[in-house]
Structure formats: C-alpha cells, structure tokens
Image 1: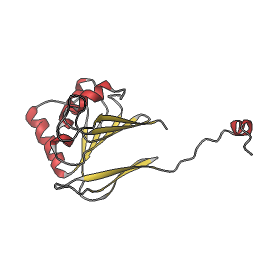
Image 2: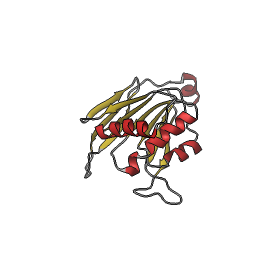
Image 3: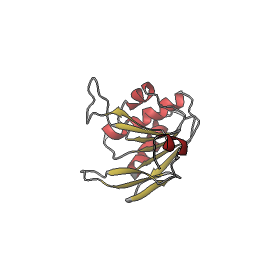
Image 4: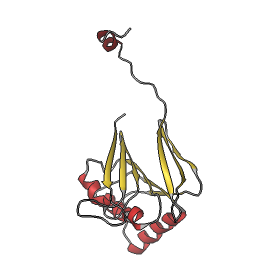
Length: 169
C-alpha cells in the first residue's frame, strides 16, 4: 500500500508567508483522506501531486475558520478542475449547515456529488476493507473532534526466493 502524508497547511489561526492554514492529506493508494481544510489550502492541494479526481473523504475537526473555511474553495477548485467522483465530508452538524447554506448562497454548481455526514458522537466513522477512521471529542472550547486512522491487519507478501538469498531459513 502506497501511503503518503502531505502537509497542505501547518500554521495556526493565521497564515504566514510560508505556511498555510491547517490541512493534512493522507494519500492511500488511489484515495485521499483530508483532515481539515483551512482557508486557502486548495492552493497547496493544486501544487501537490495529489490527484483531483481521486476517491476522497474530508474530516473537519471543528468549526474555527482556520480549520474549516477552506472547504468551500476546495470544492469549487475540484469542480473547476473537472472532478466527477463524489466526495464524503464528515463534521459536526454546523459544518453540514455551513456547506449547504454557503453553496446555496454563493450559487456555485459542482460537477460532483457532496455527501455530508454529521458527527454526533464518538466512535467509528468509516470502515473500509483495510482501514477505519474513528473519532473522539477533543478538549477545545468549541465542539471539536480528533480523528484516528487505523490500518487494519492484512497479509503481506513473502518472497521465498529473496529469503533464501538472504540466508533466512
């Protein structure tokens, strides 16, 4: 499994000349798991080697602007670049309201389906064949969640010929 972590933004509260607001992408093969979408993060998404039409899930920790405001720009950037696959977005109920209201108010159409998931309790959010994402409440002064990506057990590939060459019985 090809697994890469791409830091799209590492600043807090305000961007700097060199660092954008919070956003981390985990590329797992042909899928992208995006954690937070700080304002302007789509610029670094475009600059990265991440593919715009990959299977994608977005997880927003909380509704502070430096963690969530960039979701609108990301959606529009993906659409303008021809995305067709649906995208799953996970966050507290206010995030779902924010996205629905903002896309209606701004009036931009998207070229793909957005599937919104309310997080209302701790626990399992996503279970795929070889990984899962869980969440727990974070200690913050607003409703916030921490996410945990767990790679599930799977068989490896054992190369018998290579083991013999290395003298492994």
